[in-house]
Length: 382
Ligand code: SAH
Image 1 (cartoon, rainbow, N blue to C red):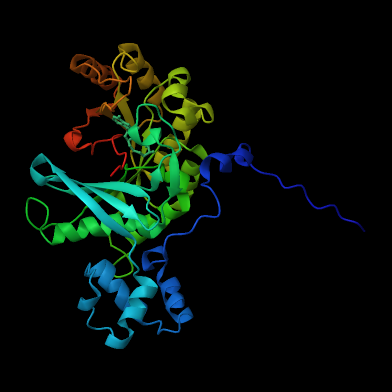
Image 2 (tube, rainbow, N blue to C red):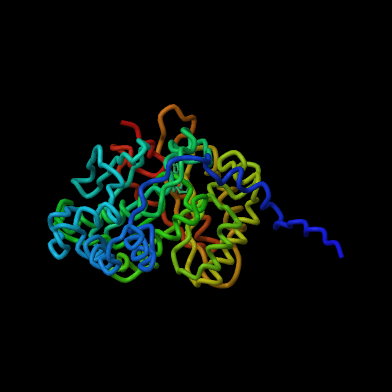
């Protein structure tokens, strides 16, 4: 009996996705680090180097629990083995090149150089009741939104799980060491709103979320509710995140309620329409019972008309609970861009119209404008 091999079938749209989502192949990978691995993987890696596996737990405690970065302080490791253990699981991942401060030292933007010279930025924002670190998930971004500085340079590469986690660990270190205005404290929130499209680097991002939420010493022991993943709306990945069962907050960068304008502002919309994208976000909210945030950068005479507020209200009107919260972000103007910030009165009217439809709406207080650390301003140049 002869058999013809089955023709591979892919879900609609899947065949063309990798073209957009994948980075160039054949690159050198970032050094392997314990934050890339789960506890079993860490043990295995040590053993593959001929080192005792049980030391992995001690190294994890130094990294995630005590936030130690100097091997000299790891005095519970045998002196003769310390260098090899550190080289195997705690290689240097990135070097801070520059830290800029604003808002009396409560906003700090750090420029990092990765092992291959790629540059990324992260921003720590301290508020009276919480401290949020805004992390990058890619060097550059391939989504090409014309109003965003990061989108102008294109995608360089995906970051590894450990490179993402290290931004949080570094922020946590500066908080516990009292380097941030306001005295010692802890990072309570993480937002994937730095450089890159997190859902285009799905696997590494989920790994990073797991390291952040795993209890110490396996991870940082943070609450998933304090973590926000922001996306342009890669619909298949939103669905995948829904299945993941980690109750992170989902933020959707919508910026327009109609396909005609959104195709221009968020080019991936030509692949996934507003209706499809909002459906996926609504499904996420229904399944996780987490309220979704809609991000909407207010651009003068582009997307800020009162009729568009009404249309946005209609597009978001689903279900019978407050599944959505709209965050209006006064546009941060990017050098050389034709987009400008909306007038205050137009923003106020926009809020009124949404609220009139029962949609909870706030205007985001944006931080770090003067150090180019605000939303859409991260371009990472030396
Ligand atoms: N790629 C993801 C993560 C980046 S988050 C995403 O787009 O959601 C950065 C947030 O800032 C997004 O909501 C983005 O649309 C918004 N943004 C980009 N450029 C901006 C600008 N110039 N002013 C205000 N917000 C901007």
